[in-house]
Amino acid sequence: MRVTGIIAEYDPFHNGHRYQLKKAAEMTGADAVVIVISGSFTQRGMPSFYDKAVRARAALRNGADLVIELPYLFSCNAGSEFARGGVGILDRLGVVTDLVFGSECDDLNMLSRIVRVTSETEGKEGAAFVRELKRLTGRGLPYPLAVCQAVSCVCGGEYAELLKKPNNVLGVEYLRSLSRLGSKIVPGCIGRKGADHGESGISPADEKNGEKSGGQDEEKFASASALRRILKEAEEDGGIGLIEAYLPEGSAQIFRGESFFCDMQEMYRMLRCRLITSDPAELRSIYTVSEGIENRLKRAALSSESWEEFLDEAGTKRYTEARIRRTAAHILNGLTQKQYESLKDTFYARILGFSETGAKLLRRIRRTGRAEVISNLSAASHLDAKTAAALACESRATDLRNLMAKRPLLPFSDRRIIPSFFRDGTGS
Image (cartoon, rainbow, N blue to C red; front, side, top):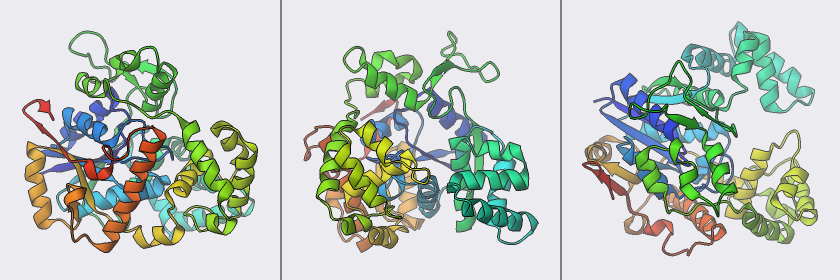
């Protein structure tokens, strides 16, 4: 049985996601597709735009068979940890045969060469990369830029250009994680269709890949960030109707009427209070707080009246805006460096939804997998201590998102979430 895994956010699930999911299943001959999606916080360091349960239903409606949560520990983290968490979960399920990811370059060989060069400490290319990286970081270059320039020096400028695109970077990390695990999962990549990740614009399908939607007009594509921007700017005017052309029909039906998070000022009010009232030593214990950044964060909180001002004031060459956002989330969650080190290899499988095929797959996973499977948090008992601690961190993240979105805590808490089931063309 071939089982294909995909690691994603689906915030919201759009036509590009459906294209990737369908293409991944076709290219691997998959009998089932397993999706690992971020939970209440995302890799960009912000609360998820849409609730994780809603995003799971959209994935099931569009071809997924099993949807598993990527824990906060990994979902609200740098690309390397995001990838390590997703790959670690898929590997421990014991049933996944393939991992397919989207990339801007659609060239697995080039991405694999970058992994070899940046991972090896021996060999001509690996040694040259290490020397150049040390030289560049010694000059004070931010690490990501230094890596890019060192790769350019060893492999050529076209390889450095690849590392300027976010999905290529994530692809490299997926491949690196598979290699470090010694996993038997076979990787594959699919070229992104339509707008690049993070682009603010929207675009139709390009000519070489263009598919017709229902045999009529060209299917329209836009990045998730572009769709979130449209919804935020038109919150009072049109809702989901403004982006409906960029969503699969089933996805649009699911997201219609669902609330979304867009008030970063509410997050900043909570963060500002925490920063102003916390001792620097307390802040230094938080995961990703280092190099004296706690003092800069406190100063920024005192002088900045808005979230945007705070990000501008707190950012440095070494601390990107994304890292500041993730650090802010960890401060609010109370995740310490010590806790993260203790829990970073905790790869449980929390089920958000499944199809009939997914139900059969779950029975196999429970029999042969190495990941602790959790379907209903309120009914879970006798959990491994580290799994319980990681789930507690996840529950805090969900409560934080609900507070910021001004939702009642108890009805939307993690203990009230039960997996969605999809059968015979209808989801519930």
